[in-house]
Amino acid sequence: MSIVEKSAVQLRQLIRDKKLSPVELMDACIARIEKTNPSVNAIAGTDFERARDLAKLAETKLMDKRPLPLLHGLPLGVKDLQETSGLLTTYGNINYRNHVPTFDNSQVAKLKKAGAIVTAKTNTPDMGAGANTRNAVWGATGNPFNPTLNAGGSSGGSAAALATDMLPICTGSDTGGSLRIPSALCGVVGLRPTPGRVADNTRALGWSVLNVLGPMGRNVEDTALLMAACLGSDDDDPLSFDTPAEHYWPLPAIDLAKLRIGYTEDFDSCIVDQDIREVFRNRIEKIRPNVALCEPLSFDLSSASKTFDVLRAENFLAAFNHLDAEELKSLGENIRSNLEIAASISLKERASAHLDQTRIMRQFNSVFNVYDLILTPTTPVSPFPWTQMYADIVDGKKMRNYYHWAELTYLVTLATNPALSIPCGKDKYGMPFGIQVIGKLREDHRLLGRAHALEQFFMHDTEMQRPRPDLTLLNSSNRELKSIVTHPPII
Image 1 (spheres, rainbow, N blue to C red):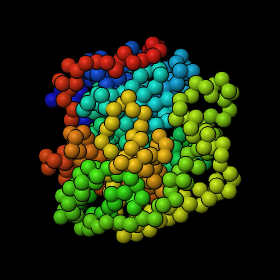
Image 2: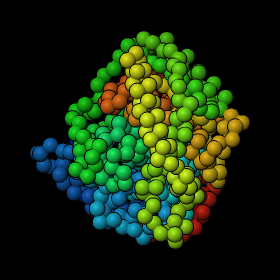
Image 3: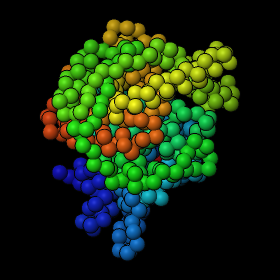
Image 4: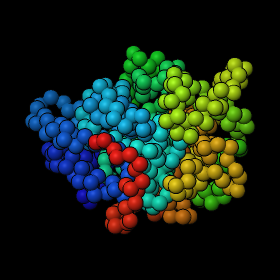
């Protein structure tokens, strides 16, 4: 196993034991990026020179007798929606092709303080709108298991970078599934935390619970390690609150046999391909004999999609309404469609949506009086070509708009429960299959511990183990993704 293939937890320990130099690790990650990224186009702006300098500094600090920060010397990928001081941040939009912030987003600042070294930005759709990572600045990100297919979004660059071992840890963000969907499609882990658990000092609507920042890793343990370093309130985020890092790291040991699991294929309302349903049923039957309880659940979420339409449009209006007509023209089709929805919404509809979200939250809350976890498929379809903007047909049914196919994840967003996607083998097409694992509100640490117990169980079954892409095949493939960039990137 090469250095870059080791988990973040393993790399952390090797650095602490002085068996691995942060410089050696950084050089290995940069070499992997330079070799593999052309095949998937996961990386946006890079900061290799400064990252190498910081790795040298991290190496010298190993000689100190003071305690090392949690992520000391670990290379970090930051989603290109998050500001990074002195490093290009484009938001995937052509108006920001030369935008270099002078400050760090609150999550990035915390991760730097914890010793992580920002090495590169990771690709995202235009302004993060959509679950297919492609934009006019950097081009499209291909799936590591088949670069002609999409990597999901909007944290698709981070997911693909993790799956190909270019970086050991990455950041993401999530509104309707942007951490969970790419994790599922690329075979890694992404956690949507309880709103406020990870501070976000740049969210336009400070009191909105839809948009969250979160950690991504190749397994649950790595994700929990990164999460522990993300914690802490910020005065400019009114939802944020302090949480002890020791709740997250090290992860608590959980007895799988005691878990009470409720599951649903579709929340009694989502459209899901039959092939995905069959794989999910197969996984449930493998889990059932090994836990205390595993039962189907019923939900009343028939009005949830309309509620999400309204609340999502409200957020987009808050974020982009200040732009003039010329600036609005530069926005992608997905963003403009949200603004069109916003223009037609009445105050009565907004009030109804907020009332319905409260009802949904309470419905989910009642489930956790009986069960420890809710399991669902993460996505309703197998990865589709990145040339296709979104899954417009699911199970033979036409989708209402570009995000309708993400119902399985955005319904959980409305409930505000923490949720993550964990890899669970492959689907019928040989692509990664992800299970969405949902926990009780504000019990993110317990969710991670229980998901880790499931992951450990999956490891002992070849059909459910985390799949890994064939990098030899990937690196020898036709590298067309780089050529679709319509504007030369500034690095």
